[in-house]
Length: 311
Image (tube, rainbow, N blue to C red; front, side):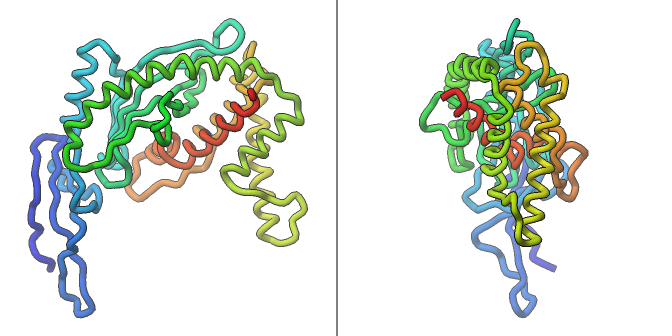
C-alpha cells in the first residue's frame, strides 16, 4: 500500500476540495512520491478531480459564486443558470447581458451571456467569455472580445497564487463584453444581409471543413484518401441539408451567409458525434464540446470564414 496521503490544504463546504501527495511505483515496486504534482479532491465525496502541479491554486466554487453575486448585486448582470460537468471537474455560471434580433423584422432572436468557467482538474484556466445563443435552436457561439490581448475570445487567469483576488477582474471583463455586444450584433446582421449563390455556398462549406479537418482529394488514389473524401462529403452534405431546415429558411435569413453559418453551428451543437468520457453524465460531453472543445473550435472557424465574405 502507498503511504497515507498527506493533506496539503482543505476547505469546508460543497465547493471545498483538498490536495494530497501523489505516488508512483519504481522498478522494485516501491512507492515514490511524485515531487511535481498533487491530487486535487472534492472535500464532500473524496472523489479525485484531477492531478495538478504543486503550483496549482484552486479557486473554490463558493469564492467564485461570491464574486459573481457581488456583480449581480451591483446591477451589472442577471444570473440565469449555473452548473457543473463531469462530477464537478468543470463548473460554470451564465449571466445574461443583452438580446437582439437578426434579419428582416429582427425576428430571429439572439441572447448574449457572460460565461464564467473554471476547471478543478487542471485542464483549463479560469475564463470569462461571451456566448451568443440563437434562441430558436440553442446554437451557441463564443463572442469575439473587442480587446487585442484577449486569446480564444476570453479573459483568462491561470491557477496561480492570488487567483482569488484577481477574479475581481471579472468586472472589467463584463465591461469589455458589453462593448462587444454592439459589434457582434452588427456582424451578425451583416451576415444576414449577405446572400450566397450555390457556388459561394459550396466554397464556404469546403473552406470551413478544410480549416477544421484538413484537405481532402476529390480523386482519391488510396483507401485513406477515399475515407477522407467520404467523411468530407458526409459532413458537408449534412451542412447542405441544414440549409433547408426551417430554422435556416426563416424570412430575412434564407440563402444568406448567416444561414450558412447556422447550418454549420446547428450540426456542431446538436448533430455532430461527440465522444463521452468514462463517468460522464448524459449530455456532459456535448456541452463540453460545444463550449470548450472541438465543436467550439469548428464554430470559430465557421464564423471567421463567414465574416470573410463581408470583406
